[in-house]
Every structure is written in structure tokens, then in C-alpha cells.
Image 1 (cartoon, helix red, strand yellow):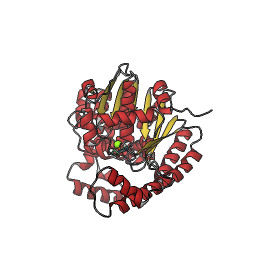
Image 2: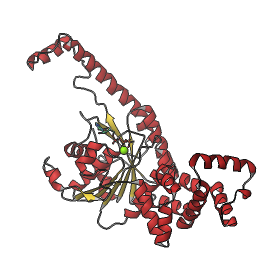
Image 3: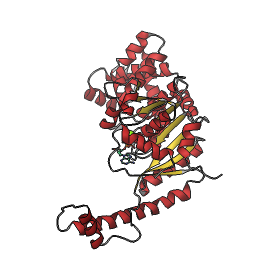
Image 4: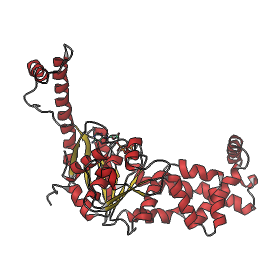
Length: 385
Ligand SMILES: Nc1ncnc2c1ncn2[C@@H]1O[C@H](COP(=O)(O)OP(=O)(O)OP(=O)(O)O)[C@@H](O)[C@H]1O
Ligand SMILES: [Mg+2]
């Protein structure tokens, strides 16, 4: 099948959920927001779930740390920069702890049980710091809003994990951490004695645990056992939940947008991720090569000192004496950078299979306002560059 010339426009038209994934800092959040804006311009009612957007971007979207509620971005903000939304854009900052809290309240049989867990010392740690929690909660949130009839399209951003694979492994890892033999054993030790008893613990383990108790203060073991007991009780086994969350990512209405830079490590990572998606029967939508360096004008013929000087004079610029030679060097560097990016991308082109690759050139500045976001959205929808 011939890849579409406008793969992202096709995805926006045909999918209900798009998830941006990729290595840290490649542009997942920006791409998710730009897709959201583009879709809202096409009449879609979009929910954009972002994670830790850059401060200025968050401000442009009207979302700040103080507001974790979903809020419609005021269309007047877009009108002010000449962009008309025929649909709507609702933006929301994903808050891991809050999502976890909501789950606890939702699945607790009684309010008292929920309160006990929420106020447990260890809950604070697990709900914010345990490896995989943020990724897992992003997926939980997705499952919670996936069928919300108020939206036509949901764009989910993923956390700034050092390794994009962490996202797919999160349910498994979280489940292992919470469902592990050690944890179960804690619970049993606690339950069988009615009260947590150190007699039940093997000698060496006891020494270690007393050490922990000393470090963290009294009541640690009791808090731990109580916490694990209630959490297990609450979720009825993370394994089932995790597999349900995973299953939600396999549907026809979901597609992953694999974002990468043109750098070899980032390309390797995104290709590995793409492979994992295929293995897990999860749909790859498109690759986006973000911040790609295009060749500058006159890349083939080059720029001489005389050309640079002529350009400076014709613009009436008064620059330092060595300006012309610096322009020549900068031009040569830009040509090299573009050639390098193009070479690196051949690896991706060779391995991307039927998944289309969209190239997005580096914009002149960071993408921090609605005008730039809309511009990036246009580039993405039109097939790139
Ligand atoms: N095409 C682009 N041109 C110029 N700047 C860009 C472009 N895409 C993204 N940026 C800038 O790159 C920075 C990183 O982007 P972004 O926050 O979207 O990355 P991320 O993958 O979400 O990072 P993290 O992994 O930390 O969540 C931001 O400052 C953003 O404005
Ligand atoms: Mg991000």
C-alpha cells in the first residue's frame, strides 16, 4: 500500500485516540498540542491530555499547575492570532497523584476505606514516585476518558521518560512492584498476626527492615503492610487492571504517533518502540521526525564571502568586519547539518515499513504560543517540512 501524503490528517480524520511517544525532549508534548489545535480547526472536539508542558506553552493554553481540571481553551485566544476553531480544544494537564486519588475513591467500597488509604504515609510515595506510576496513570486517565461523548478526538501525551519503552512497560512494572511476592508476604505477615509481628520475619530480613524502620521512623512496617493490604484489596489485583488498560490501546480507534529527532539514538529508540508496538499488536500511526534541519537556500552551490558581503550591503546592514566570513561558515554548517540529518533518516526510512514518516523542520523559536502551535499543526497535517 502506498503511504498517504498526509498521514497525520488521515489519522485525525479516522482515529479517536492518538498517543505521542518518543525519547525525552524530542517534542511529544508540542506535537500532541499541535495535532490538537489542527484537529480543532477542522471541527473536531478535541481533548488534549498533556504532561508537564513547558511553562509558556501551558500558559498559552490556559492550563497551569493550579488547574488540573479539563478546561476549554478560549477560542478568542486563537482568534487573536488569526486562527479560527470550528471545533473546540479542551486541554488538561495530567496529574499523576490526582489520577491515582480518583481511582482510589472510585474503587473503594467505602469512603472510610478510601480516606484511610489516601492518608497512608506510603501512599504519598507510591502515588507519586514509584517507577511506572506516571505512565500507568496516563493510561488509566485515557481509559477513563476514551468513551467520553463530549470529545471526537483525544490526544494523549506521554511522560518524559528517559526511555520511551518505559511507557509500554509501565503496567507490568507497576503491577510487579505492587503484586510482588515480597509485598504479598508483607501482607500475610501482617494479617496472620493481626498485628505486624517481627517474629514472622526471617532473621536477616528483620535486620534490614528494622534498619528501614529506624530511617523512616516508627510505624513504617505497619503503614506498609496496611497500605499494601488495602491497595491489593482495592484494585483486586493490578494484573487484571493492567491488562485491561493495555487492551484499550489495541483497538482500531487508537494510533501511536512515534516522535523522534533526527539523531541516531533517538531514531534507534523510536524504531525499537515501533517494533514493540507491533509485537504487542498496537497500531503505529506515523513517525514524526521533529526539529529536522532542512538544507538552507543555495545549499548546492554554496555561499562565498562576496555573496555574503553583497547580501549585507543590499540590506543596508552595518555589521562587524568578519560578519561575511561568519555567514559563510554558518551556511556551510547548516548545509552539513542538513546532510547529516538526511543521512541519519535513511535508517528510519529503511526500517519504517508501511508506517509513514512525516518530517517537521525546526522552527525558528521554541513552540510556546498558539500562533506557532497552529503553524506546527499546519505543517504536520500537510505532510511535513
Ligand atoms: N519543530 C520545533 N521547532 C522548534 N522548537 C521545537 C519544535 N518542536 C518542539 N520544540 C521545542 O522543543 C522543546 C521540547 O519539546 P517538548 O516539550 O514538546 O518535548 P517532549 O518530548 O514533550 O519532552 P519531554 O520528554 O521532556 O516531555 C520545547 O521547548 C519546544 O518548544
Ligand atoms: Mg513532554
